[in-house]
Length: 416
Image 1 (cartoon, helix red, strand yellow):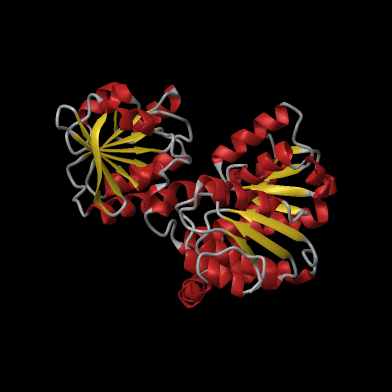
Image 2 (cartoon, one colour):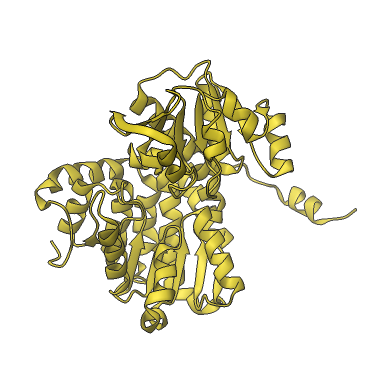
């Protein structure tokens, strides 16, 4: 174990190793990339700082980067998603860890800053948590960083704002915007894992219930798809008129959030924005309504406002907080408003994160040799990374893409 790691209990490592080994068995794309791309020496000696939800799938990515010769330091991107047994196992495997489950706000900040203070060459970020703090609080270390990659929609939005303001001094590859990330992770991964987490934590039946999905980006499309598949009556609320019309065309009921507040049994946010459900919504909700967040931060609904409205709160079930209002209605918040699929469950399926973390591994590998080819600011992932990840995944399934003939290529290039 690296001596300066901070983990809750080193004795938990055996269970963490077991979880990581399970991931290794079901991550054919990462395993292929580790053998064919990461082994070329590009990452040898590079310092990599990572902050992503710190559970077994993230741990396996960190292990492979360390196996490629990098000096890897990890911290968690969400206080409730960090798994202490995984942290202990990762530290035993030679990765520096600064993370514990459910730390104080002060400790959580401390972990992120300690990760930055290792002076990384490369950053694998989630929500721009490391990049933002690096620029604001550690300007003396900015010059060490040759590049970074960003995992989330929220982080990409922050980084675009930083680029527009001219404060982002190195290239950041938008891993979230890679097709092999958002088309699978954001949609299928978030959708199935969030609905599964809601069901497992409440032990309730979803069929026939009105499930209100806030937003209709890739995350919310997945939420709507899997709620619909479980027999729910799906209602979509969305500010973008084009996306709202898409939801209507998919067969979902669409309306504004004030109308939906009176009808919904389950509310799931997936916007990445703040306070999309507020006091005026809570005042209209049914007794027993469930609120779950699948977006990013815990301010997707106004928890402070709900706490002020409540006359009493209690833990109704593990990961379910019940707020009783003055008129006797009870509203139930899952996972304290944190990401329900990772704060109250194990997150996306392994096979989905195999694709996402393959993109992240290849982004780090690419930047190690080609960061100088990019201007500072947020940048798209190279198309060849998407294509390589897709080919590796198809090969693992025994599937070969169709071959385009020379005649077809010529036809596509001609205007005649």
